[in-house]
Image (cartoon, rainbow, N blue to C red):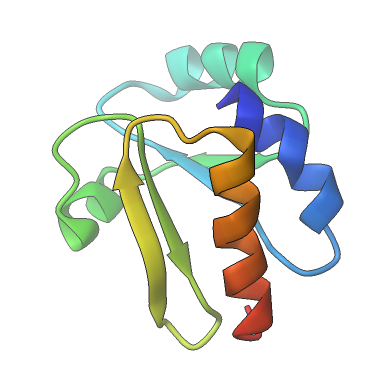
Length: 94
């Protein structure tokens, strides 16, 4: 999450980045989000886990506004890989 949070401001005008937590309660999630995130929106929604077949964290999905999945990966991504994936998303008209 620190890499995503650090990169997010550079894409603020073109990409909406949302961290979706699950399998916890709202107060615990809020406390963690306040420690980890300053540039990324977050929410608590277990239904997203089922929708995308998520079995563990961290996992990332890049989806265009027209619901086209551009990329997904399990685990942390380095800054260069994350920027390349976000650039591809922007090129498709996120």
